[in-house]
Amino acid sequence: MTIEPARDIDSFFAQHWVKHGEAEVLFIKRAARKGDRWTSHVALPGGRRDPEDESDQKTAVREAVEEVGIELSDRTSIAVGNLPQRVVTTSWGRVPLMVLCPYVFLVTRHDLQPLRLQPTEVASTHWVPIRSLLDPGQRTVHLEDVSNRLAKQETGLKRWAFAGMLGQMEFSAIELLPAESVYCQEPPTDDSKKSESSTLGMAMQRLWNFVDPPELQPPPQQQPLILWGLTLGVVADLLDLLPPHNALELWSYPTFTMPDVRLIIWLSTYKFRKSKRLQLEAGNLSMPPLVKEGLDAISPPEGERNDDVGMGGLGSGRSLKGRSFESAVGTMLEGYYACMRKGVTYALIVRAIGLAATVNWLWSLTRTPRHSHSPSR
Image (tube, rainbow, N blue to C red; front, side):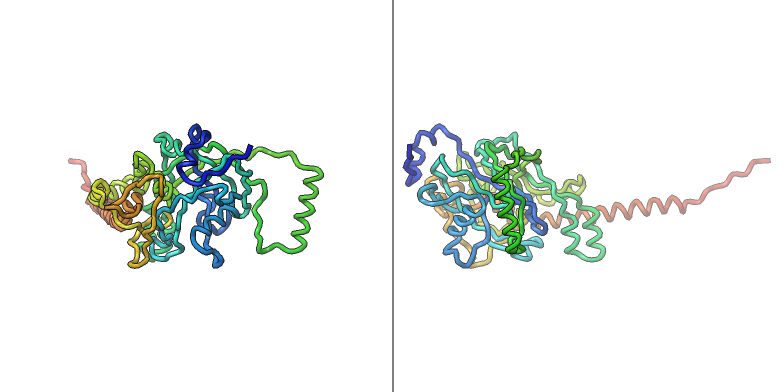
């Protein structure tokens, strides 16, 4: 029985299988690649725009076909809208890498062809129910060792101090519970190094596998799938469009694991965090920020904003006086890392004072004269 694809959101949600189904989001786990800053991370399908792509949305459509084998056409999906753009940078906002343009597509068929994973890009795919993304029981934290990265950006005593005091950085995260997973069966290969002989060898190997197919082995025991950082921010933007519009509960402000640094950062950012919370409650959202790898946020340059943001038919989320949808998580982060860096500086000063006091106390102990007692006659 052939099912006619839905042409709009109303006809899609009127279908029986949709009414009695469960909405899911497709995530990928990136392939392990040397030199990739996001190697093995949980992410969303996507990639860089090619010169031949007519638009950013066309790039999203092409990448979906190449990475996971989903054809986002009128027969299979509805282009619902896009989320706030973000500029991904390195060196704590100093060097821009790319502009991230998230687009959302609603898959309108339950009889899609099996996913085809691109081995060089995708290790596995995971359909995750939205209900589990909103489950408080799935909230966790992700620890990232950023001290070495920060230390490389400094010199002299400051570099040594950063490397020794910061340790791990703590980010809010979600442990994903997939309803369905697909694992790549082919090892990743470097297309740039292929030759005619290697292509022939691969063809012969496939022929041999066809004649005498190996017994399929179940995927190895996987580590927990952790959603965090920039991808969590994008997902939070999506979930914030859905009632009860509480995407901020998905995360907390990043901090460090060392107790003294953690306390000083909490104290130094208290007023900032309180003002941001009041700002959101009052609806006074800033324009979409530029975000650094899920770590940092900076103000967008004048003239480089894209206000054409929205999710037609799925809700309005957070908006200000009829303006387009804004990133709640991005708004909360904007300016936070400047305050946090001050907190790290304060913690460094406190540690230096404590170390100096301890050294001075030990020195005073060694300089204290000892009184000798001679026996009385």
